[in-house]
Amino acid sequence: MARTIAILAAAIALTATVAPNAHAAGKGLDLMKQSDCLACHSFKLSEPKKLGPSFEAVSKKYKNDKTAPAKLADKVKKGGGGNWGAMAMSPHPALSAGDLNAMVDWILKEGGK
Image (cartoon, rainbow, N blue to C red; front, top):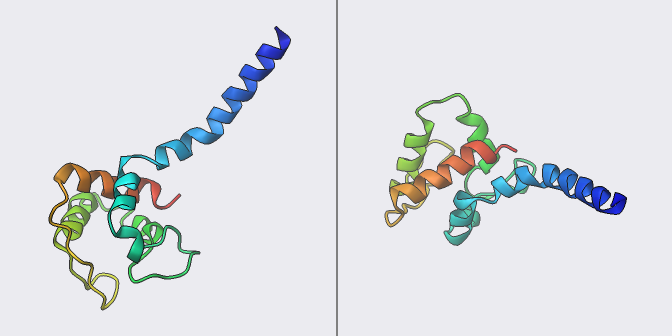
């Protein structure tokens, strides 16, 4: 009985440390991995610079911008440049509104973690 309780306590403690990362690997991240996002964007500022900004940089820049989700979803769909330098992001017109929102939501909420 004591061994079972110890195992349960260990499982609960492990779940508490894994749960935030489980959320991070949600639909938005899965969609980005299936798309071409990771070819141009890294996750963290500390990682080598790619063509576009890291997801962490985007998350930090738009942290307090209430219009960011709609603005960024539109930017991903239509593509374009000017916000982060001369290199333009390619458009992704085939992405649904739901997929775009999931991706942008992940970047804004999880990209800075």
